[in-house]
Image 1 (cartoon, one colour):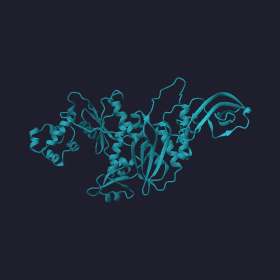
Image 2: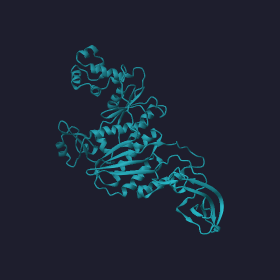
Image 3: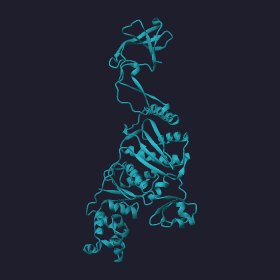
Image 4: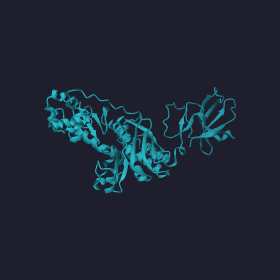
Length: 475
């Protein structure tokens, strides 16, 4: 087995800064044990703000700081979102709170061109989510996490003696494995400064000093004992949240944050070779009810650029009741997407793709109630053989009706005054149906040409062969 550990050491800041290209003087505070700074943007640090400063001290050096309280629930939700995204690289993912994941990637190495190529791809694509992290790799998950924390970018392979690379790591990494601060102070007091020093201590001596947790942690990191992990189980639909650094009602920053969400959904769908026909973008305001935008695609898609275009159309026409402080995305039910292949004579689906884009933009601009599609129904009677639906609705499989059907079907059949004006070209096609619901029809249909050249669909009732009606036109 081989593990990659991804750690986001400034996750409290990133959950807010990822929603903007320039977070400004964003500073995260926490009231434990006093109001103090737990993370600060680069601009805030340049002004003299430091992690651990009291809020009063921070405001003294930078009065225009943008303060946000730490959001532990949002951090946990972001880790879950990250795990959903990481399914693009491996299905074996384990949450490693409070700020990371571990991924078992031995079965993915060949697919991505080797260990280093996989690590580079993971770090590069993480940026599309607006996040950045530290990566480490080792044959055990705990060793990988320690390397990500202390030696970012180090990828130790399972060669003989690989455990020696852990010796230089500082004692502080043991806190990640549940070793208490009192034990760390004890080890420091007897002269230990790194894991190599601890490994040279007699184990029975550690046990007498109630430091068995240290031995257990080292055994897990070195692979001497199993490190059992719970695998992450992805939800049936993709969900994610991006918080804004500051509430806003401006189009550009809202679109920037929305694209972060669309990128995560695209990776989640790609890992499953699936697509979605719609997604729901929810705008959370400072106060009052949320604003919900349902983004419908003309066909199943996972193209983040398409969703960005639809979101732009909807947001540009929207009058927001209040500034937005967070955006939430929920995907529609995923559907299978056939893999796309090249074609010697061009893309055979290009016309359908362009029509789908037009349909999506019409829905985004005019609203879902202004654009209607038609879906066939399992009924032979022409007037009941279809129903109006939203264009994004996937029709169930229905057998197509036999014979020709006109594109323009009249709402009510119109009586013909002169049968002689028609030339019958095809037919008859007999339709007898509806006796069970009181709307019985018994008709013979023909394709006919009017004397003015129009092709029409005509019929006469079986019990009244001299009465002729026009029911539709072919074009």
